[in-house]
Image 1 (cartoon, rainbow, N blue to C red):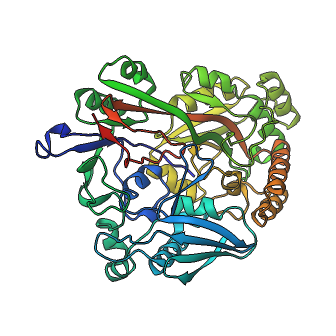
Image 2: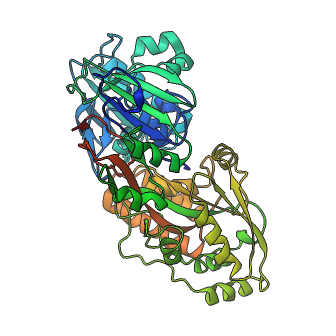
Image 3: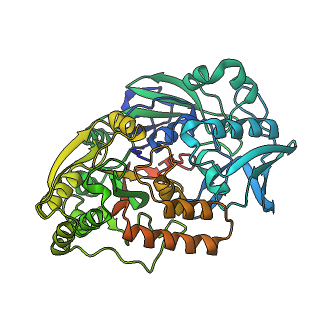
Length: 492
């Protein structure tokens, strides 16, 4: 759920490394990856590294609303339970193994077994080989979610090599079909890839791709200005005008599919188990003040739900809860808390801490006492999954752009659900078992109606992705998924 994103790129022999003739694309990011095994993580920061080697069968389109072929060439729903996928022929992994239906079946089954992807692949029942270049993805019931699941995690691996070396060794030196081949990993410093000269989709623009670890965002911008790196993803808000005003740099932005919201812990006894208290807290939040204050305009308001219009199931007719602190105080009094109460507001240091501070101020304005807990990313994630976060927590999510993947976390059986409601459980089960888009859209509206009466979350804002680039980099397209597709990039 929580997932921090950071990316970047470069070209030519920047940073002083490599030969004078060697073209180099350098990507700055705030943190090192934990593993180079693609299915070990759903963090886009880590996927942006591993997917340069291990490609997927299909990928989300740039706007996030459609699907693009990668190692699959086409797909067809041949019956209600079967998606048939045609595979690209003549492709080999960089160790010489053939990419074919057997390797695709192995790789998809690897995805299904991966703990990080279980919540994204629960609609898929099995994988069957049809012929050398065709596989069937089978579901237990009709489903509208299979393509999104594949676009999320269908990374492809060389079957014989993976089985020989095992996951741990593969994660240290991956082999794939992608535009780049793994070269070296200096932990905490950089990860380097060489161009794959046999890449099936033609020659890419740089000999070397380097992801350089620069934890301080301001230091990333300084490295961009000096020419040490070519792309900084997630330019700090205070540096945007600086990048825009430089002749040697350029800025690329787009609305993100990352959605920020606050989640209530309703499974722990206390005031937040009362739906009227949670309704009160929704009236206490002024999202416009968040957008114009700590976000400095770098975000977009949500319409009473935790999806944007890029998500299937988004309800365009719904309106946001109107900021009304007097109404909030009235509801608190009706719930039996006229003098307020104390609760925790927790968030990760990868999120915008000023937003957390502003939220705390808004809650204090209606008479509540807020204990803010700013947690390290690893600690936050560990506590999230262990259901150890208290009170309310604020974070951002970047799932596939289908409302199911946002709202499934509020099903009582979800692995880190902080909310339980039999009505929501029933609605999620109903839409999960339907392939009818009109029916699913109606079910999502019913969910939102229930969430208004029995809140699980407070919608905050949609993110805005901001990339800083060397002005000579060409071909860059910011993608709603935050995937860093370097294949078309060149440097003039």
